[in-house]
Length: 376
Image (cartoon, rainbow, N blue to C red; front, side, top):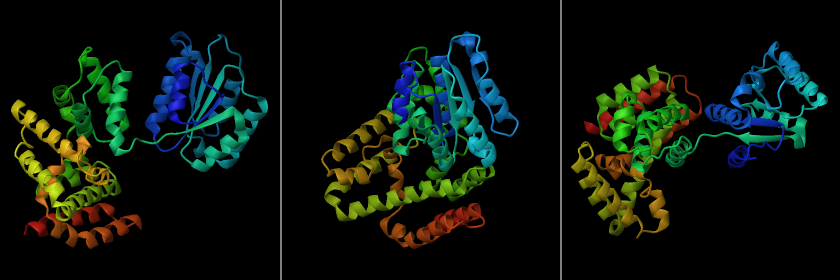
């Protein structure tokens, strides 16, 4: 079952099967879905008795069996969240699932397993067969994150503009839990008004403290000192070097592609570059006039995109407003230096994928080497 089908069932206040397997790597979405189940299916007065969260260790699993088959003093559905069942030993998990399947799931009872290991998810589904549904939870792709933010805002009784949603992502990053937390605050303070760029800037600006987008922007501006400082701060806070490297690689590939398209199709992309040059003059300004000028320039680029072959438009991300606002940074690079650096990028990427001993140091070395050497 996909997430959209599950959400439709919740809106109808009816779950199809008594066993749900929340699989996949996105823990926040699993937690949110169980919270949504609680609010949709169990009246507030009965939640203390009818909603049970438990772990998967040797003591908790047997206790959970007793609770599942215990008597209920009200007619409301009973929900059991058994967290990270794949952390239990194979024997503990097998014994628990065997006892649960043999006893039969009591009426008006829904058991939710959260699991990261796909093999264990399949094991549970195989045990309960037609009585179970598996839902895989994955974070939205980067180009879908803005739409996810807008949907979550609507769920909270508010509305957010495209520009505000994109800026919120730039400030917060892609962590869904933090995004949702900040959206809740903005929705509460909006008092029914649409959340715009101003509200996001004033309400969430405190979060912009050397995040990944700061690093990418500093790199794009060829500010070696700021880029290295941001990178050190990110690594010190435990941000995965592999994730930062992936986003940096993607940015450099996009810059190179844009310059390659200019060389191959100047009839189409010279006008785009001309508009980006004008945009760069206002990029660092945030007054009303500058914001209007930036908005108009982006609109002109998107109008040009409508006249281009769809393949080129998608490749250059000319309709993705979040990326489009930072595309002017490509002006700080040229085709020849990006092409010359390709081999080093490939070698560094292979090193990351093969498991180097100190990925943070490798990322710092690449950043310093690329920015300092290219500026010298």
